[in-house]
Image (cartoon, rainbow, N blue to C red):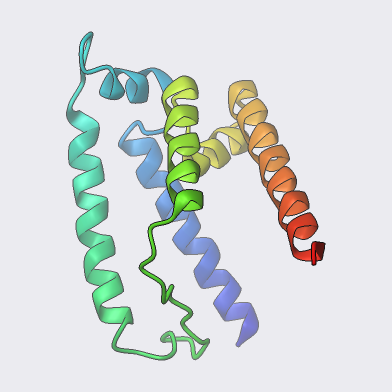
Length: 144
């Protein structure tokens, strides 16, 4: 059963990656053109995001009514609706990074898989940032 779960997860990841390639979300220039409202704005990615939001909304609405996946594993959905300083600062950092690089985590992993150096640099920086966050969280939890 665990092997089947992993195969389904792999298939879902491959389909997601293919969708990113087909929509050109892995092209940093296209993403930056979408974010450049005062220059060569390209609204096409808004349709990709709108489709993703619609699918995600339906999936989460359905998942909220269940306590396990179709494969029998537990569903763990966020329970908090708190908008705090950490969330706002994290969102700002994500948005600034996305705008500067034209890459976010999903497309970054696709770029790494294709051997793209820019994607490798992005993912390395992302992993370093995640490591720094973990170190700060660990240090914060040790304080009395």
